[in-house]
Length: 412
Image (cartoon, rainbow, N blue to C red):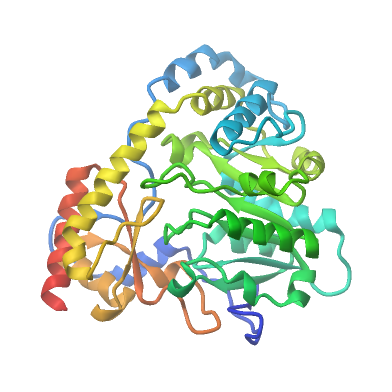
């Protein structure tokens, strides 16, 4: 497997660390193999939306069914690009500044775009000399590491710790490292922690990108799943700074916002010069997004009613989590955004022990935080945590969280 260069802070020593040979869910299966669940099973591991899809999806697909026989344009339809740009304008108050021709590209879900991001950045920047670097947070979405691997770059893990609000510490980064960086993959809201970067943090990162000549790929797929306040976005930050969207690309999709993970439809938007070149690469290497899926996206990005209802359902479940777990955890457990709990269970023996115990004693399946991270400058930053997905309907979530609360209350 590709070796990772670890970067907890700029002063941390670098070293080799292999990617896990299996994904987090395969590792979880191995951890629990041979252990019978202590009750009927409740699975709270996978972040797959379970709320209803928007009512109009079937209608739009039916209206555009014949377009499945056509090869879609790799750059997307004009209607798709305009629909995404209009939504970004409304959401982030961009004043019509997104280039409708070259500033938006359709993706087969944001994952596809993230996978190809670093190789496009490497080729477009053409940096010579030291080996290119790709920076991303630790814990992280596994695709980030794959992007660095595909680009033949050093993957630099930046530990996202509680004292930094579960975000990478931008002030600790070595200028020499930034000079060889081609891509910084930055998530807000984060998975698994549900942390949100401020407008000022985004602007600091944009300043670094322009000063050291690297691209920001902002993974904002949880942008519409928040408790109270809409998270600021990277395009919003760039617009406030002035100077356009140079070095800034956001990636988002319908998977979380509209419960359409299976549609595989997302977008990249921002720097029009980068995207105009990227579309040529994607025309050789990437599959197009089917025209009926793009038609659904146009309708979905034009409708907020289903998004508001989706958010209400998640917030109802976060209220249940605070009700049941705050007494044993010592305070509220809800996060600013996302649909996961990120529970510090170090008092109960850490993520691996609690995951095994919960399955064996209660039948609740959660994911150890260490499976979403790698060893960094000070160990694995996920060791103390478990991730709990609140995607099932409220009654199932209440049942599962009640069992977790009972286990924690008895064993503390």
